[in-house]
Image 1 (tube, rainbow, N blue to C red):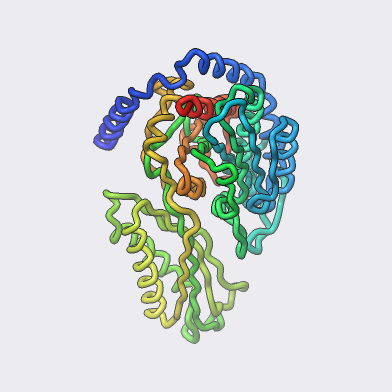
Image 2 (cartoon, helix red, strand yellow):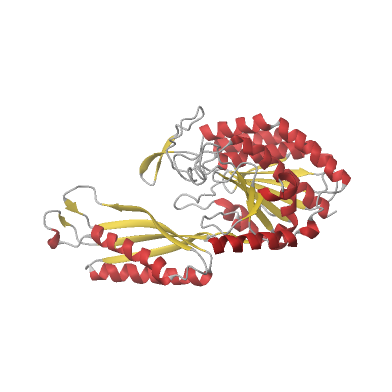
Length: 442
């Protein structure tokens, strides 16, 4: 581990030196005055942004069902005099703010959907919403911070609208549904918005996005040029056995025991077939379903899971080995099995040139030591589909509560929490990136 941190530090210092030629971004007197005014407006919106987030948090909606959230966003943008389009990618909202001067089109994106998670945090604005998901009753919770993303982008829209006449270009606000993936049988998310032309009319030149980070200190930003997050593939395995009485297992073929053996075999693929010193890879079983009674060995069992990779060759090897292990283990038990694998999210890749140009903006806002270069992560992010079409820069905004240790309250859990004091920095970051990019292009 010490060598890893030495390498990371060296990479960070090298990266900072390579950015030195861009260190004067935003140094023009006119731009500095504009940024200062925007910061003052953002400071004045702090409570408003928090209130928006709490309202959305208390009323969460799953992907492709963000009707209330979308209506709230659309009403806010319309009140600011921003042209609004609704129903993009099913429930998405797109706002267009045309600046007073000609220039590039900058897109800013926030995701709107919640997760099928029952909230355990005792907050005054705690979610009590419930629903049925994949056949099970569950709570609905903003357990990944999308509520904060929406609130911060609403705040950025208000700040940028206040200086509309001085903007050297156009801002496209993209409020995206269904980042966590569409319900079975539906399309959704960034992929569908791109398909429906969200990056056109007018054509977007660059896109910026941010993600709140519950494990990072408030006041910090993290980023990475190139690969940011993993490709996400989802798989489904169905094991077919022979039903029998639980007291006479020898009379049938047990798909549950076979499934347990398959799970262990799949984990061996990661530990024994993947060159993990080159790239990380993850294979996780997220659900296993079989049977409905204690004394019946069922006829079949199903499991679903995710594969995360940062390398195409490793991904292809995983595909091949998963099918080999599943079918071979099933055959050895006298069962049969089917495997289906589908790509859910592409790998998110930050444009390196754009990243180099824009990181100094974050450094100017937060301080050099508070903008940190980080390794690629194994999470997935469908911002990737926007970044495939136009240069993109995606970064994270620290929001760890002061009484929590790093990684104590991970995303996608019932205990997920964030420090709302981080929101103002997030609003300012979106505004600074927009204005500084436009200033560079004048």
